[in-house]
Image (cartoon, rainbow, N blue to C red):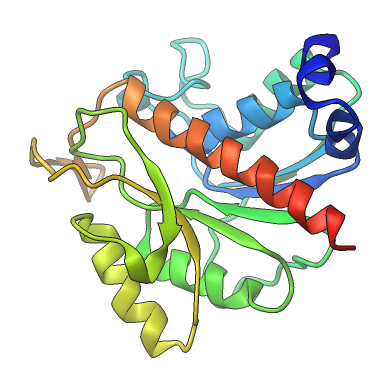
Length: 227
């Protein structure tokens, strides 16, 4: 990590003591885990109940023909340990919902990369007053690798952000830092394993993940500075 330390100075050592939980190890979440591990974050929790499928090959860093059918958390954890043998990786093979017991208190940051609206809202609500949370909005039906950081109530254009604004307001969540795109959606949806799956391309989820990693590291530094 010498090159990272050259850039971040003492901040690189702070990352080695940081703990981050990532919910959703898909197109965005897999890259977030990769970026944070390579940046030197010392402890990552990976939360997902899904397995790698052939349809993931166009955009997910953990999706290879050799990993199809394997649990995403297991594949991602093995990759992260191969990158940094000193990293602590926790695997949670579960689908998060409002009834899921989970202790958020050990984590400096929770990153929401879930694609189910009800689960996103439940996760964000559960983190209130317990752990900082950073949430990704929609990356499907996007062609442009351009994402920005904003409070959820200041977002526009993104259909997922619009739905989240309404639901979070109903739940009394006053603020939420998100990464989102102002690009109007295009491309449509297809039926995939009983779900409506949006169009996607390789580089867009990675671009969103890079912005999440950038903002996540800033939040970790800010949080530790305030301790």
